[in-house]
Length: 180
Ligand SMILES: Nc1ncnc2c1ncn2[C@@H]1O[C@H](COP(=O)(O)OP(=O)(O)OP(=O)(O)O)[C@@H](O)[C@H]1O
Image (cartoon, rainbow, N blue to C red; front, side):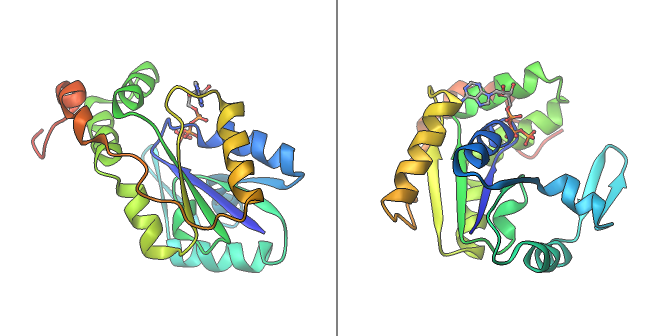
């Protein structure tokens, strides 16, 4: 089974994917490292541009029929048996990315994306089986236990569990709202 773990930067994808893969005995795959190893990603400045169709084909070739947890904010765009979308209150996204030293623009883009569900919407457009998990106030172990419990119960789709519209006032200071 291919489990993709996606979410806004800072939501905890890598932390959760590593624990999840250990608990399940699945291989852990960083989508960025995989893409670069296959010559799919191209470094443009400090960003990596990845052809998603090529990446999706390579993932299918390499992992079809295998048990893997694929970690990365593009993983919801490749075909997976289930996509886990990690959600995190936008204010905490801002705090984590601020701590990492993200530029004001990059921070605003990502806080905005979390606020309006960008990854979730993209995941639903690409995959039928999408499970959203709110990680706010939970330890990574608690998040993994929640994922495992949902998978064990056979839940294939659980979306629409968070609404960050009430968080707008909390994060408006970080937003650029289309300006520079
Ligand atoms: N549930 C959690 N509770 C508290 N801190 C967490 C939690 N999950 C992750 N963190 C911390 O938040 C930071 C970001 O986590 P992580 O690198 O796993 O996020 P990510 O979504 O993979 O980010 P990126 O997309 O940039 O790779 C790390 O410092 C990590 O230790």
